[in-house]
Image 1 (cartoon, rainbow, N blue to C red):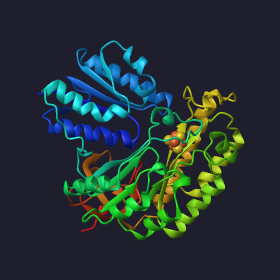
Image 2 (image 1 turned 90 degrees about the vertical axis):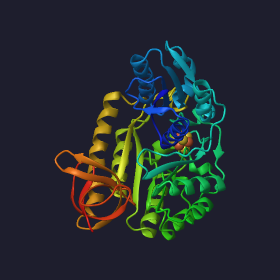
Image 3 (image 1 turned 45 degrees about the vertical axis):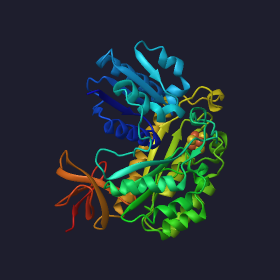
Length: 417
Ligand code: SF4
C-alpha cells in the first residue's frame, strides 16, 4: 500500500482542497498517514500569505525529504505557485502543481501508483472527525489590496455552480456532518451568495451553515437579513479589518473607512444580537505611525471583537506595499503585535463574560484531555466561541452547555441533559 502524508498550510480553502484530495486517495487504496511519518509520497499544500508562510512551506518540504529522501514530494499552493523555480531547486524528487492544476494531483498519483486512470474528482472534502466540513465554493481574487500576494497566486476567478455546491453539501450531511463551513478566497466574487445560502438552508438535516470569511464591502443588507432570518446560518462572520486608521486603510487600498466598517458592525449587532465577529489586523504596515496604531487599538476596544488574528506586516515581493519606503522597524512591529495580542485577549474575555451562567448550543467535535481540566469535549457554539464541556454526550452531537468559567483558550461548562 502506498503511504501518503499530507500537510496543509494557510487558509480554509487550502484545507478543503487537501481534505478532498485525502478522500480521493483514500477511496483509491492509498494509506493516508501522518505527515510526520515515513511516507512514499508527501503532498504539501503551501501558503504564501506572509514571508513566514514561505519559510514554513520550505521547511516542511525539507522535513519530508529528511524523513525519506526517496519519497516523491508534491508541492502545490500559493508559495509554489509564486516560487516554482525555488521549490524545484531543492534537491529531491519534487513535482510542482500550480493552483489551477491542484485538482489533478489525485489523478496523477492514482495513475502513477495504481495504474488506474479514473478518479472521482467530485470527492468530498471529508475531514477526519465528521462534524464540521469545509466546502470550497469560490477561488481567486483580483482586488489587489496593496499588501496581499493572493491576487498574484490565485488570479483565476471561479465560482462553483449552486447546484454543485448544494449537491456536495447534501452528501456531506448524508455522510454525518452537522456543520458546513463555506470557504473561498474572496466571496465578493461569488456570483450569488445570498441565492446559494437560501438553497443550502433548504437541505434537510443540515444543522449549521457557516460563512468563513468575508470582506466588509461584501456584507450586503440582504446577507444580514438572511443571517437574521435563517436559523441554520451561524451568527458569526469573520470580517477582516486590517487597520482602524483611515490613512492606513487608504494606503492598503482596502476600499472602506473605519467609520464604514463600524457602521457595518453596528447594523450586524442591531439586527443579530449575540453575533460573533472575528477579524484580522495587520500591524506595522509601511507608514503606520504610533497614532495610526493607537487608532487601531481604540477601534478594536470600541468594536468588541470575539477573536482577532494579529499579523505582523511582512513585505511580499511583487506587491505595491513591498515598494513603499516608510518601513516600520521590526522591533516596533513586534511591540505593536504584543500590545494588540494583549488587547485581543481582553476583548475576547469581555465577549465571553457575557455568556457566563448562560447556555450555549455546542457542536462537540472531539473528546480530549485538557491540562488542569481532565476529560472534556471541545467544540464551538454557533457564534464561534470555543467551548470545553464535561458530561455525558457523544462527539458530533449539538448539546446545550451551561458556561461556568473561562480558560485561556476557551470557555468551560457542563453539558445539560
Ligand atoms: S480582498 Fe485583498 S486581502 Fe483579500 S485576497 Fe483579495 S487582495 Fe488579498
